Image 1 (cartoon, one colour):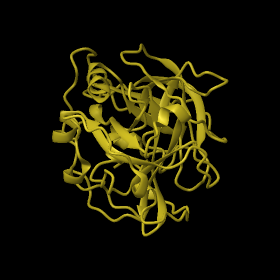
Image 2 (image 1 turned 135 degrees about the vertical axis):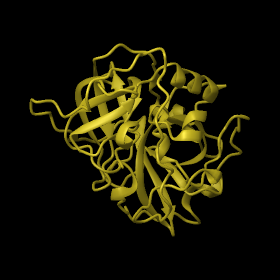
Image 3 (image 1 turned 30 degrees about the horizontal axis):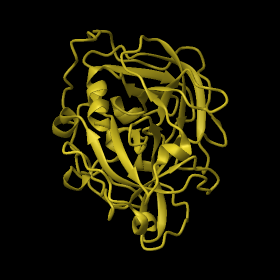
Image 4 (image 1 turned 30 degrees about the vertical axis):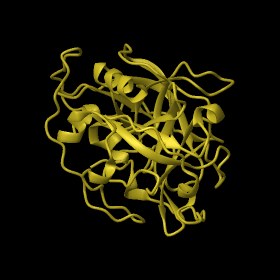
Length: 301
């Protein structure tokens, strides 16, 4: 099991009247293909949000577009990896929270992505597994969250879009979810800007990875190369950098980051193999191939 999501849930103590944001949710657009998490498999057990464990992963279905390598299991780079540093955050990346009895419990990390409707974000699919979404749901997204502050507000997670192979088999190569967020009369992208989704990028690639550890109120970031995971059957990237502890699942792998705005091209999210990694110094992401390109096309339609 990975250690990047609810295993280290931290309650930040922010009061939410009548479950916070549910009072001003707008009637969200609901594409026919949107998958409701209310009927999905229960999520892994959490300290502040009890639930059942997700279905165990089965052997993933490798894509013919990128042949797998028979090399042995990976290990951290022999040289000492860098360590992530805390910073004040960036507008388009934020924390996912569960609302529980008026308190916010940190869940995962997510990022706003470009869409025609201006209301779309991305995270790891396992972060939303079994969660209650929608206007009456209890999952919110806080872009730019830091030091207990919500500079761009709190947004309800209305619905998710995941690959059918993830829904059926929990294939780690498809551990990616797009989700629609809502606040009455507002579009999140207008306030935060957005990352650009890029697929089929050549590796290795220098990326900046951002995540929200559950033990702190600040995000962390680290820049290092993302390379192909040399493990048969897994179409994954591996990223060596310390400090990505519980709560960083869903954190974006960003390429070509703009120094002024902090926006970049998202080519991965912490997740997939080992649900993102069992060690704080080694993180994984599904490689964004045709499967993610098709999923993104579905999400923006």
